[in-house]
Image 1 (cartoon, one colour):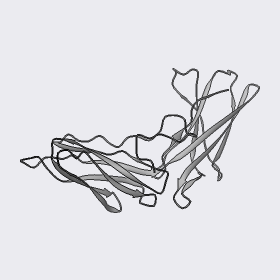
Image 2 (cartoon, rainbow, N blue to C red):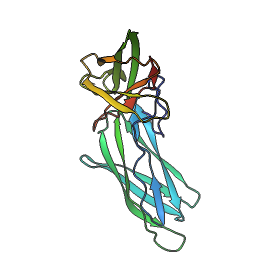
Image 3 (cartoon, one colour):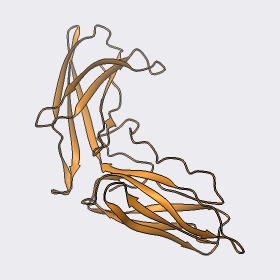
Image 4 (cartoon, one colour):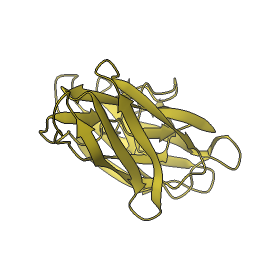
Amino acid sequence: MKVRALTLSAVAAAATLVPFAGPAQAADCGVTVPNIWVDRPIESLLATKMGGCTSATWDVVHVDWGYHGTFAFSGAGTQYDRLSFRDGDPYGRYRVLPTGAQTSTVDASQNATSFAMRSGSSIVLSAVRDGAYVNFSSLVRNYRPAYNEFRPWGGARVVLQTRSAADQPWQYVRAVWSNSEGRSAWHVYSPDPDRQYRVYSTGTSQVWGNSTAPVTR
C-alpha cells in the first residue's frame, strides 16, 4: 500500500490520476494527510501537523464504517504521526475530525480534512502500425487483497486519447470496457506516424485510475 504523492509502478508511466487529499481548513492547528493507494498488505499513513499548537488529536473515521484510529501529537516539536491500514480495511472516504488542541496557554482551533483509500491499478499500452491504421491493445490490473498482488481488472473503462504534439491537449478517441482478462483493443485510422497516443483507466470508488506514457506510431 503506497501512502505518498504517488510514485507509480514501472508499468504506469504517466501522471497519476490520484488527487491529493482535500486541503486543510484555516485553523490555529492543522493536519494534512495523503490519499492511500493500496498495493501491499499493510502500510502506515503519515499525518503532518501544522501551526502553533503544542498538542492535538484528530480521530480518523470511515464515512460508513466508523472509527479507525487517532492521530495524536504531543509537544511543540511533534510534527508527524502515523496510523496503520491493512489492505482489507474498508475502502472509500475517511474523515479526519478534530478532538482537541492546545497552545502553551489556551485551547486552539483545528481543521477537519479527509482522504480516500482505494486499490491501486496499473495499465500498459502496446501499438502496432498496419499501413494507415494502428492496432492498440492495453492490459489493466488492480491490486487484490485476497492475492496480495495485482490481477487483471475486468470491466474497467479504458479511454484511448491522441494529440498531435507534446505541447497540445489530449483528445478523446474511443472508450471501451476491458474484458475478463483486463484487455482492451482499438483499430484506429492514423495516417500520421508522429501522432501520440495514450490510454487511461477511469477510476471508481474502490479503484484508483491510472494512465500510460505516450506512444508514437
